[in-house]
Length: 312
Image (cartoon, rainbow, N blue to C red):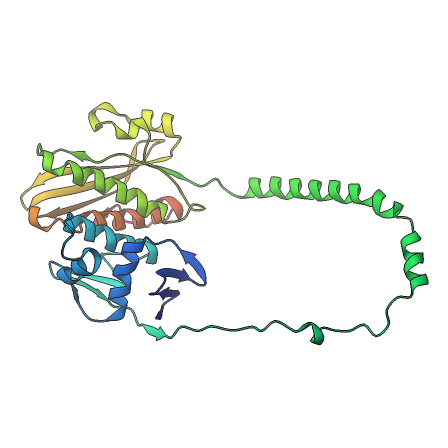
């Protein structure tokens, strides 16, 4: 079954997602989650149903994190947001729902028969043996003389175009993302710190390699906050912008804070804060990552002077 929605087309049988005809990368398991959501548009798909659909009843995984990752991957592929969903809506503690207008389309195949040799165009007048002999006798000196000139001309034009393009095309900005710091004093949130940073890198990368460069795995970025400095990050990565996060204790239970700073002058461009009960952390990384991607898009890529400094 093919599904069309917005600029996208999804083939549930092959798991291929396309946007305006171009293939969009999506992993098999998130693709299966998307297929289930698309099969029942506007209807809530419960978390338990998704669990059974993706892992079955005999597989034991960290279900909350696995499901959060799958839905996050779906949103990344669609350019969607958990805060302001256009495609996949979260129904807290219950499930998810596909909310965009959907047009199911049956699979189509266009058969193009090969043209039989007998139907190929015929030349009514073939060259005579004398004409063929004469053409073979024509010297090829002209071709031999001109092809080096053509090659040199092509190289010169290519070099000129590349030089002009390099001068008028600004270099893409680079953002470095540090591993998030667990400041709660509880080791049970170490994995959340690592996962949140990885999902943040993934969301920023999805903004497009032509728009932004993302670095998230150099030694400096893996150091605890007390042992790293913005100047060291800039020196090691060459980045212009820096993202770091903190997991802290909160009255609600746990708070995840993420910062975006400009390294040249250590200016805070943006910050967000999300607080949740320990039992309700299933999508906190996705919410924060979606907010971060939007902030980077506006502050870093578009350099929008009206971009918000804080997202709640």
